Image (cartoon, rainbow, N blue to C red; front, side, top):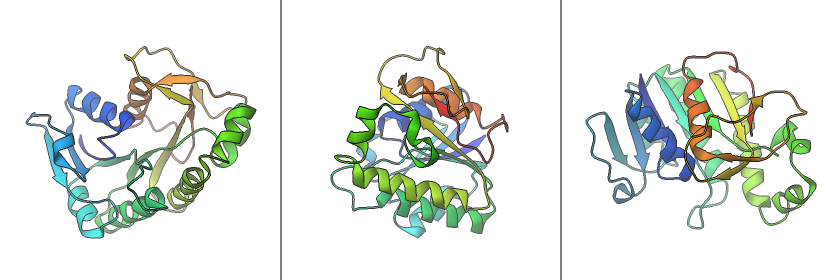
Length: 205
């Protein structure tokens, strides 16, 4: 499958990209700094650009069968960069007729607020307040897009190998816990061929 990935230099996005390539998918990754993605493989196209720029986004999405968004906030990004970039991605997909969209968000966003521990909830809405508001806005854009979307909400992210040992689903009783980025990536890629969670927000923990 021809995939476009946004956020491929981040921890989870890189796992998605590497696993997608290993599975035989063709990947286009839009990155701000190509030096951060030095992989050499025939199935990978690395484009330098910015998810906030409509022309860059449109070029990256051209020819895609599905789009995966794993954007995050960094210190050198403007406020609301995640939701603004997602808006550009959605608009380009609508224009080009690309329907499948998978977005990595976070448990604690939207109607999953009560699925995270109280202490983490305090951290999210104090120190991480701007980032969480950005995620909230992002999810609203995706829900209103009219695309075949899935919003994946991980619990606390950790590094380490893929284990295959995780829980997932839309049951609000599912509580946030540590989950490896590699496992999140595996679950994200499964959504390319499994339509169980189209139009839904599964947690993974």
